[in-house]
Length: 305
Image 1: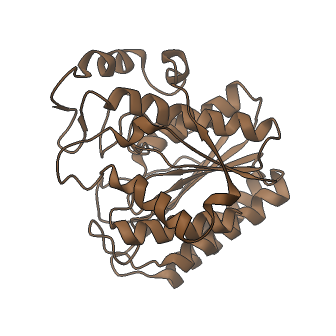
Image 2: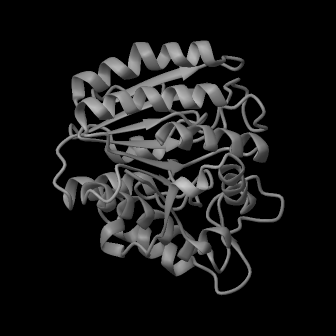
C-alpha cells in the first residue's frame, strides 16, 4: 500500500524573517533528500486544502483563532511572539498545514493509504490552546488528533513526539484527556522549559540531558514509551517528527543520528501494526541543520515505507 506525502505550495511562502532558522528551505531540503534517496517515486503526493475555523476550534479557543485572522498582515510582517512571525502568506500556510493532518487522517481511515508524512510548515507542537509560540501558529498535530476523534470515531489515539523541544502546546491541549496518550522525549533544560511538572496520567514525558545520544534515547523509548503504548492500545498513532535532536542541529545539544530516527519509527510501526492496523500520521516539527534535516526525514520516511 502506498504512503501519502502531504504538503502545499503556500507552506514554502510563509517566512518569519530573513535568516530565521524555521525557513522555507527546510521543505526543499526534505524534498531533495527524498529524491536523492529514490524514495519520492514511492510516495503519493497530495495538496492539503485549508482548515476551517470550526475545525481549528476543536483545539484552539475561538477568540485566539479570531485574533490570528485579525492580525494576519496584507503586507510586511508582524510578530506573534519573539520567535513567531507572520508575513502575508503565513495564515494560508498555517491553515494548509493544519488541514494536512486531517487529510492524512481521512486518507488512512478510508483505506487509501496506510501511513502519511506531512511535509509542512509552520510547525505546530508549541502552539497552545490560546497562544502562538516557538515558530508555531496552530497546533497541527492536535488538529489532526481531534479530527480523528470527532470525525472518524477513534476512541484512543497516541501522539509520539521526539522533537528536541517539549511540545508544551500539545500537552496544554490534551493533558487529562483519557482518549489521547502523549509520549515525549526532549532535552531539558531547554526552551520552552516545560514538561517536568506534568502529573496527568495520559502524559509520558522523558527529559534527556545535553550530550545524550542514541543509546539513551532508545532506552527512554523502550523503557517508557513502548510499555505505555502497549497498555493504551492506540487505534492510530500520530508522530510529531522533529529532527532537531540530531547531533548537527544548531539549536540544541542532543546527539541523535539518522539511524536513531529510523529505529524509533520502526518501533512505532510495530505498535501500530499490533493495535492500529498499521495506521500512522507523521508531521514535520523542528530540524534546522538542512543537510541533517533532509537525511533524517528521509530515514524516517524510508522506515515508514
